[in-house]
Length: 183
Image 1 (cartoon, helix red, strand yellow):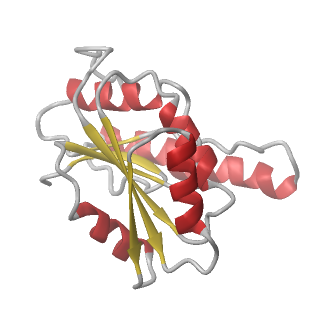
Image 2: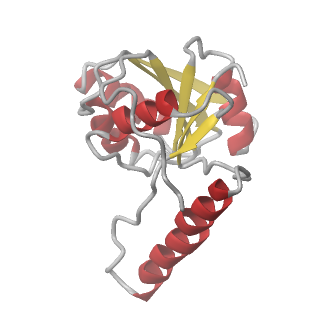
């Protein structure tokens, strides 16, 4: 019943911006940036990291990772707590047609950005957001992570698919989604 349109292109090259809202992500930010650096996406990827009132060394860890990975990353400090404040601050700096929100503890499949942009480019014109698939990395570690895997499957994947059948998806999760910037 739920047939996604075929990709019009499998290799889009549109410039995109990735917004990463961080709160105390000193230990994770380097890894997520490395996964962004290793994408097979051919378009320009701009990265904006918003340090959202962290009490650790997230800001400095981001700058260090930027240098080590030879990536041009804009790092902004937002003193008002809350992911919404961080993302809204970052949004003011986006100048690309598309933007991706990505959690700082999320790692990406090497083709994740290429696929999500291709899905947007292949969708009807009135589609404003595309949610990426989010999986639990350590889903077999213990009972809690197994529950989290089922929560992601039932609460995100299955429900989003059902809502999509009715052309009424209510929300795109902030962990990994693409949006038309102007919308």
